Amino acid sequence: MTLTDLPATNGAEFARAEERTAHNYHPLPVVVAHAEGAWMTDVDGGRFLDLLAGYSALNFGHSHPALVAAAHAQLDKLTLTSRAFVHDQFADFCAALGDLCGKELVLPMNTGAEAVETAIKVARKWGYEVKGVPADRATIIVASGNFHGRTTTIVGFSDDPDARDGFGPFAPGFVTVPYGDLAALEAAIDETTVAVLIEPIQGEGGVVIPPEGYLRGIREACTRSNVLFAADEIQAGLGRTGRTFACDHEGVVPDIYILGKALGGGIVPVSAIVADRDVLGVLKPGQHGSTFGGNPLACAVGHTVVDMLATGDFQRRAEELSVLLRERLESMIGHGVVGVRVRGLWAGVDIDPAVGTGREVCEALMARGVLAKDTHGSTIRLAPPLVISAEDLSWGLDQLAAVVSA
Image (cartoon, rainbow, N blue to C red):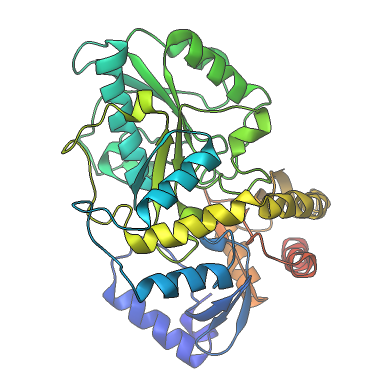
């Protein structure tokens, strides 16, 4: 697809954006001007069904009335104090999020990568002060195919060359094992291990779901060896999989929840790590912080997100629509699709190379009024807002079926 294929205003605006920005992304050539629910409208008035939901940051759809109202109300009162002072939204947000997770303490940050970095720091400090690991020898076990963010520490233990190459030297202290291989993980634990950092479902990897029992096995291994289990639920959590957290599918409670994306309701960046006092209590004033972390606007929106999740309605909706998503995608296997993985309203779809690349399929979907995103060449990810109607989801899947079978 070239810019000459696009309506005039959209093509011109996209070209302007590409000319004046660093090319750290390869966006589809659409310029969105308005969005509501599961639908987005571009600068030329074209409408598109959003099947990406901001990589799960928009679990509740665009411009959800309750979230917009919370943001508007807070904007008129107070937006930032820094953590030098306490504001009137802070305690309620932290208490509500801690209760949702069943944990005692909350440390709010902004982005998902910040939350992962925070968990790494906390796990290391816990290892030295509580477990008794010798100074500067702490190790953290991670999985192959992981995606936890793009800071230099995090890409240092990525095996994705696009994320990693050209950004070294990298921080030591990470041990990589194959994702889904419990025996390899257990064998990697030694006296220096302070944490296992795992995505319960690997989103960027193509919605890769581990074998049944994997998360339970990690929990048991960590408990046996006095190691923290840190679950990166940034994409998988907060209703996306049909449960509040993806770990809930195996009845597993990690020591540290790492949260982000949907926690900000698609309005502001909000992230957090949530753990009990014996873990998060290792931090003392001056040892970690963020000027904007836990700001009043973030807390007002985040608290509303927690209240919405507490009803269970969004989780149930994701689980119900998962049946439609799975049935329709599985019917495409052998007709342009070679494999699918579905958990809740989240799917990885492996495209037959004879059909084209994931990027080419997404461009063809865009031409039909559907927006999705490719990953790792031949896979596309589908993550519709949890507010999508069954009729709209079915229509979107019709477009996918038409593209891959053409």
